[in-house]
Length: 211
Length: 211
Length: 211
Image 1 (cartoon, rainbow over the protein chains, first blue to last red):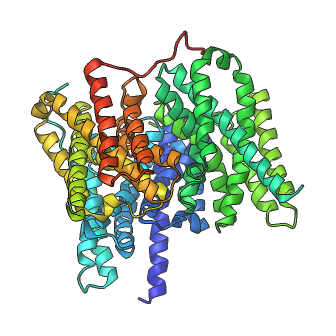
Image 2: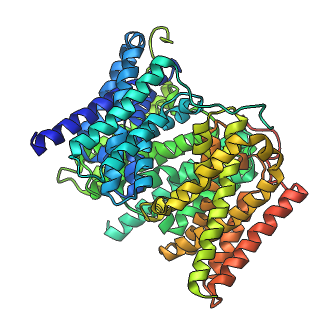
């Protein structure tokens, strides 16, 4: 596959991931009975927030999300559609959750590999990959007035970290970039979908809280 | 009007806007019975937060708010005054709200034009203008433990975005900078004041929430 | 004392401060019955957040916390230990609080002096010192769904600001760096410990809230 096709594929997958992240974000706004503007902001923050945090931290300013208008239009469209057709979108939530997992798997890999490109060491790059995947959702939850859902047992961050680690480690081998990315992507996606299907949870503290 | 006068006018208007933003922020702290430090932080964050987010995102570090001590002193003074004389300030809230609208109209224009200067495309620059205007208030609300008020129907972000769009569009014509800025400023101010007077609200979601 | 010894001492003290900040952060997660991941994130944010905010704002990207793996490993270890042994850690809270005061005293000084190195003027540098000390805890509280504890009368930010001011002022004299740092450190530590022992509080607003 020529390089330009690969790059186009990456951007297309990225935009798809942003779209579904934004739908999930706008749904939070609707369910809290917030206004249209909140749906657009929470959609945009969920879709773009993780990448913006990563870019600001690795020193790539202005962030990629501000340098390509498609990255701004996609969450706006997703927010409008969700706000307008929220009863339908709400019924499709299982579909949204699956595509959200696809987005997570994309972002943890592209975020980690970008951080490597900017000279971060493997540990920090893997962390940046996880932040790219989960950062937007965490800001969304804080803005919506709740503790981030991924703090309450939802197994979401661990698959993202695992996908990022796989991508960072394989990137140090001679494997082609496509294989590296696919392996990280698959690691995160399979783990996240299994967690959804089987109801896996992150460990909660044992024993009485020591207040 | 010579250039230096124009620059002085801009800084003076900027500081006035920061002052009233900071008063509004410190009032939130007082009403939640938070301490003096909270009044200063919420005042400072409200007055300077939007510009700091913008500067960090467009890559102008350290942010302008840290490079000129007047930008730090003004919100501190505003916070002290509000904390000390809060019953009086509270009664003047309508005045504060009007000046807050003036600050919003300033910030959306100066923020957007600065982003254009830093090479952002028009869509991203307009967004940065809006963020400059509304970002500080959103951080204030999150720190104070509430959902941002502009998520609950208050028509605040849309005028800021409109003012930023007008400024960005006219900036691409041959009009003098003063006219460009004035047009964006007036667009935001008139819209925001009309929304206040007439009680306009942003649309809320229709139908039952699809929980 | 040779320079390398001094630098090693600084890093060692820094890591000790991060460790105790992270323990305090992870304890918040356990007490809210959040999961292991939350304990690690709240620990990491508390330990590293202030320094990351400072570095992003003064333009030192990627932040120091991402450029040295020890800075990432220490809060992870602290988070795991706290999550696993939280009943014991909880009983030791007074010890944690004292070491937390040591960390605060470290961070306000190193943060302020780093900001001076990056060309910030004294007022802004002192502010950055305070932000380095208190920023992580504020993000932790927001993520945990509460108003920052330092907004409700806890005397924590003022000692940090005082320590930063002392360091910034003495840094403009001919005193050796070690003396400058020690004076700022001692100022913050003594004030904070006295506040703890004597129950000093920051002023709360007087009179009825003007709602």
